[in-house]
Length: 559
Image (tube, rainbow, N blue to C red; front, top):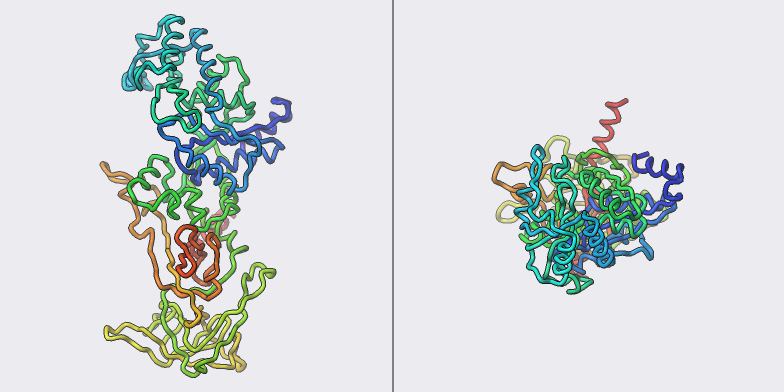
């Protein structure tokens, strides 16, 4: 059991909160959700469900300069896609702007807040350091009456952006920099707020809006990521000074994932700079990108459960996320045959006009998935990697004079290699053994390899996109001085293969549907670019599971 659930169990046993558990997920609508947010979503909604409580979805929409209704709708869609529902409990920090203003006035009346004329740069410069106290603002001791008047004029729009702020009056010598008279309100005149329009030109800072929003909603456990631990004294100060419902803030370590950046600033930079095609690019760690790539909500929830909840920061290996996806798709994804790098094969002793429909298993992990029929004919395609004119040691696939098994079909033997003028292999001539239909020889002879194939006259053409990590290093910020994370972008993060050959049933596959291409990997029909007659498949994950090997080794070492 993690430490957060232990806190909640203790609270329930003691009767604190009257046995209630009310959590919230409070995203800022200034970008799309990513895999790091998924950890917070699963934690907050999961805990509420576990303990018979509820979880609110609340948008922290306190900065109209960065927010957009597009992000609001995308966030709601992503939370639902992950499998969670907030029911009637959808809220916005902007719902509470009037109340927050009243509370700010109350703080001024108590002598706990004042209007400051210092510029943002001057505020930063006078805040002090970890070893030196800050310098009090020359405006810190204004009278309550003057502060009330100036704050009202701020609200009325009389001052320019940056000209004045409302600051809490706490302690400029506090060892916690967050308590050195933090800014509570700033002036933002454009653009209009996505919900309140031009009603307001002053907006609360997150550290002021967050505890008040929690309080007004009756949140019992306000679960935040670890970077807010130093902000907790300010969270508590706001609620104590206002004398309102005091939610309990609890911090946990955020998700750090190898080969990935999750800073919104960096993700914005990737999109704006054209390094990716958009927020839903399958290489992005956004939930939209992961979904388009072929990730399932079940795999992501499983991943979030496996990494657990800790109090200290750590980095999770991306291979664990891939392992969770493989485990999920192995159970649910239908199998299909697809040749990504086609090599034409003519079976010389097969009847010219004959077509056989061979039975193939849809999913060996799920007997209820049944079977399908796959066409077989004189001309087929195999993958170029399944043939070597001069086979290296331990290469058991097709080579001149060698016999292999075609999946669900027959044994074939290569009798001739056809090359173009440049010496490239363009076609193989083979014979088949009619007695080996289904993959076994009546005389008991064995072959060492089974390869996949597609009938040439029935094949569906497709573009297949092979995705790798967006960055070449586990830590994208590991760069020489003077360079940025962009220096570690992987030039091979996307490889596009055209004119791939797929078994015909895949021509009818719907966008978002995922299949296992046998012996190759898991692939998802692209939800943006795929069209009937112009199929596009994205590789979700390869079949090779490094994490399973790592986990096995760790288990062996610990036993």
